[in-house]
Length: 458
Ligand code: AMP
Ligand code: ZN
Image (tube, rainbow, N blue to C red):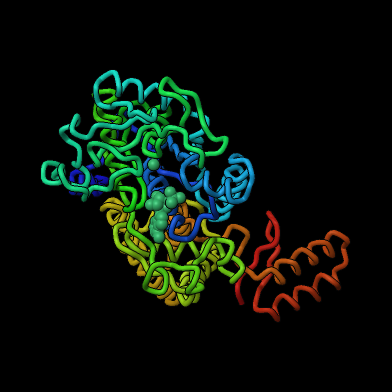
């Protein structure tokens, strides 16, 4: 049984979707005012991992990831750069999507942008006002009244009675009678430049929490299966989302809340001044491949902090290489194709079913690799062992996505293979043999199979 740790109940629970066989998934997306960093991608990769495990288990997943393209930060950036908001947010949205695909993150079904859903937000805010869960302030802002929702604080286990008359819960920048109330709609201020929408309460823009409630419900319905984000999103963002969504529709909002822990760099917070603030492009410049980044970021449990260091590059390379070498050995054996899997796959699945225990699943997989290699050395691998082994590697990679598609030979070797193919097309056998020797000198064997040339390490 698939189990996830639900941040709301603080327990591991059996995962049963609302509609059998289908999963509705909402993940908080980026605020597109700057390039996303590897900390953000730790969270996005965890969500990709979750989705891949669900798909491998046969679920049909409908995934929504929002794009926060209007908030204080995006507006500030557009003002300081003197560019229209959409120019800034389009640029960073494109960059974000390029990084997602370069990291082999499976695309969401839809990436709704907040600015395209303001109508839905206005409707939801009006509903909350009509039901006395929200009120309009003098300047034309709208606030959610925390005291109108008795379960406020359930996600963070905050006792609102104890905090009600203090300022421990962060208050919004707009001054209020009750400092804990949060903004659903922010009245227009000069700093907003030309960013505003009309509403029944005057010109303004939606609050960030409202964006996620309205967009998740627009695409997934009032009540859906899983909502994810990084731990920093728990409060106030998700706590506020729950309050306003539940009060607007009077149904439960989300069944499972999953939060991933932070990524540290060199043991601390990543920082530009320390020179260890990395975006995906920075790592690619340092010769990291997407697969190596995936390996490093998935090599820790999502609920524990992981520490990124450049030194982990080597370990990632070696680990991926071990898988590829076994895969090559097995492919070389050209066995009959069968459907089965090695018995170790059961342990692998059990680890994943246990709240996505990625490090444990990796340990099971690498132990299997070690045993498989020693069995191969002893020539104790049967035809079906070979085929089952290849199936296990393919299954593993459908979840981890850490095996490069285009072979793993260095670029110069791949280029030589291309040149050799040209020579063979021209029936220049002498040249083709010469290139084969050059490839061999570089440590690779090229063999001509029916479906094209195959490279294996010497
Ligand atoms: P933002 O663009 O700031 O809204 O962040 C996008 C996602 O990245 C959110 O789910 C955050 O919780 C997550 N996030 C931000 N910083 C980190 C970090 N250092 N480690 C892991 N996740 C992070
Ligand atoms: Zn959100």
